Length: 379
Image (cartoon, rainbow, N blue to C red):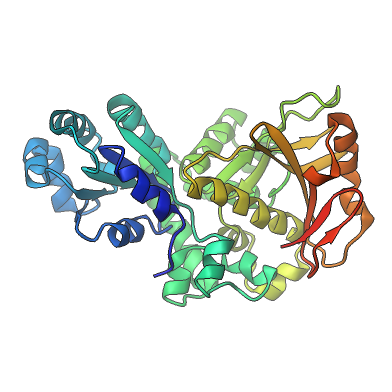
C-alpha cells in the first residue's frame, strides 16, 4: 500500500475526538486508509443493503452491536444514525469511538452540522498527490503522463488504463451519486455540462455561457456547479480579496480535483495527446494547483489559496497565504525559461509591496534558478 500523508493527522485526531470523519471523492482511498491505519477496528459499510437496513430499522441495536472502535463507511446513506451516534458517544465520553467515511460532502456535512457539530474532526482525502506517488515509487515519468493518468489509487493498484477507468467512473458518478444529491431530470444535459466545465479549466467561471451552451437556466448551472463541488469533481479558486488595484476581477476560476478525470471528459486518450492539446497549459496549471490543495488537506487544513487578476489582464495564477504573508506563483507548462514568466508577478509585487523572496514561477523545466524578480522552480 502507498502510504498516505494524511494518516499522520488521522492518528493524531483519533486521540482527541470521539468521532473522526473522512470525506473525499469516490475511490480516493478512504476505506483503504482507515482499515490500514486502524486494523483492530470493526468495519461496516452502509452501502451493503443488509447493513443499511439494520442501521435504519434498528439504530440502537446497530450501535449495541458496534458500540466502539468501528469504521462506518458511506455513513451518509443512513442520516438518522447520526443523532443516535451523538447520544451514544456523549454517554460513553471517550475518544476514538467511530471513524465515519463518505463520498458526498453535501449530504454528510448536512447531517454532521445537525448532529455531530463539535464532536467530530473532519479530514479530506483526495487522490494520490505528486509527493505520495514519488515516495511510493509510482510517479509517472513525465508531467504529460501525470496529467493524463491522474491520481486515483485503483489505476495504480490494478494497472488500469485511464481510458478504461474514467468513463466508467463518470457513468457511476452520474447515475448514482448525482441522483442522491439532486433530482436532475436530463442526465445527458448534465454530462454535457461536466464536459463543458472540463473545457474551461483555469478560466474565469462564466455561468451565462455555460447555461447557453447547455440550454438550461443560469440558476440551474449554479446549482450544478454546487453538485460538482460537493462531490469533489470540481472546485472554484476565488479571486484575492485584497485591493491591490482599483479594478480587479471578482469572478472565480474553475479547476478539477483530478486532471485524469478532466482528460477523459476532454476525450484525451493518451499522454502524447496532452502535449498537443489546446488546454495543455490549463491542465498543467490545474495539476500544480492541485498539489497545493492536497498539501493543505493532508495537514488537516483548508487551502488558503486565491488568484489575482486586474481588469487590464495582469495576473498571478496562485497566491498562498502563510501566517498572513502572501506568496505568489506563476505556473507555466513550458520547459524553457523566459523573463516573461515573472511579468504578472512583478506588477503584483509592486502594488502589494512584496519582495522577490515571496515570488515564484513553477515550470516544466529541469533547473531551479534564482532571478532578481523571484525564484524559478522546476515542477
